[in-house]
Length: 91
Image (cartoon, rainbow, N blue to C red; front, side, top):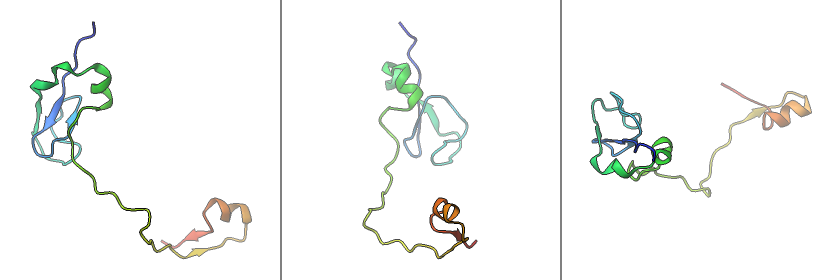
């Protein structure tokens, strides 16, 4: 049987990591990762792919939100304009 993997939970944001690090990758706080005692039954696959419960919620933007599209400058080369989504964008 495979050795169970450890998991580390950030005390600031609840993010879960498969290995200890000095700084949390999600919130950036230092020295907040501690080994989770309840993580002893985590399979190696779950630990590797960070499939444990925890972490923080992310606010998603709806698809119906109007987005202002940037003005594009056509190059005159049809295939290049198609690849660039209509031409170059300033900036």
